[in-house]
Image 1 (cartoon, rainbow, N blue to C red):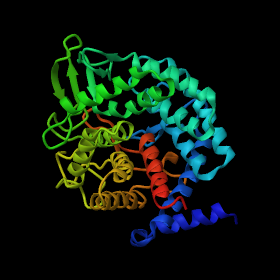
Image 2 (image 1 turned 30 degrees about the vertical axis):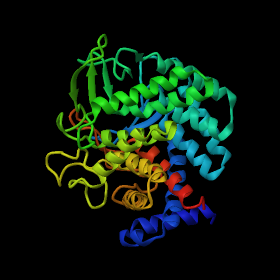
Image 3 (image 1 turned 135 degrees about the horizontal axis):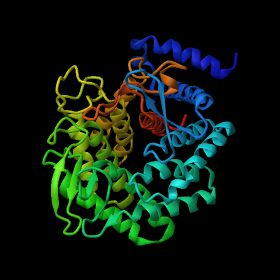
Image 4 (image 1 turned 180 degrees about the vertical axis):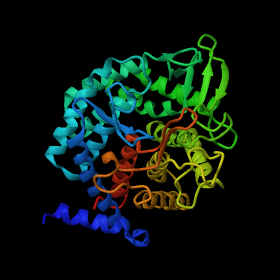
Amino acid sequence: MNRISVLLIAIIFISGCHQTLKEIPMNQLVTDDLNFCVAQYMLMLKNLPEGELPKTSDQETGEFISSKPNWWCSGFFPGSLWYLYEYTGKEEIMVAARKINALVEKEKYNKGTHDLGFILNNSFGLGLRLTGDTAYKEILITGAYSLASRYNEAVGCIKSWDHGEWQYPVIIDNMMNLEYLFWAARETGDSAFYKMAVSHANNTIKNHFRDDYSTYHLVDYDSVSGEVIQKRTVQGAFDESAWARGQAWGLYGFTMAYRETGDEHYLQYANGLANYIINHPNLPEDKIPYWDFNAPGIPDAKRDASAAAIICSALLELQEYVDEETKGKYMETAEQIIRSLSSPTYRAGLGKNNNFILMHCVGSIPHNGEIDVPLTYADYYFIESLMRFRQNLGGF
């Protein structure tokens, strides 16, 4: 019996014993989780339709649902593979990551989406970091200019959606794509990328945040005057509610913005969001949030493991920038999230869940879409969290 087989047997045993899972040392838990992710995603690769990417499962039938490369989530699966290659060093995973990357390369010309950071930076960006492939750099630069084409000087933001009733909608999710612009500024020497990213972040602070540091999901602007038309929470419970994944995007986005700029204003808002989440009276004991912090039906409302994974990854970076007391609080919450997501309540069994890793995620309850299902980006941020924990614990 080889080492991986032994580890998988151990993982399956641990999964059946939740009390034991709470007591297992973090370095062992993270290692077991990563080994499981490798095994699960090798099965995903084996069963993935040619030319498709994993997306979710049908909320009614449970059937596997894939996506085309232009879907906003298409960078998450290759990104996950790159992380797993970084963990294992296995050439077969690198080959698979390159193959999946090739599917999304044409999106470098896509000027119809704000999500090129998700699509290209998570795939080619990670690939570039791990391989130094200069062709990847050229692909990324082309894509960055495509993303920058969506910037409006009067509004001072990248436009999010080209659909719906909005004139110039900007969603909190868009903070995540600014990392791509910051990278492009460094790599090209074109300061316009940096100015766009900073302007977008500053306007997000000005218009998306409430006094308690929670955020609206969407702000609609007048594209000529730049004035705010309305503020909405489209995928949340109601306009003034705190949609969980939106808070997660904001937390991650402003943590990243602080890293890229050193602007203490961004750190203030990252910490504000972190404390809003951690101290919220509706955050469950296991730290896996309801789909909205103000969701109707709490405590029976649906949980969102994707929001939890994003929050965890963000906290693992944010703890690097704060004092020791705050660091301890953030690390404790991140560990609780990892332990919960690693339990059989949220982490699937080997070969189950259509070979996705996490269960019980929510896309958009108001739109009756992707409710209580796996989501490819939940897996990505779970793997990223594990890799960040591993690094924090000394890269064992």
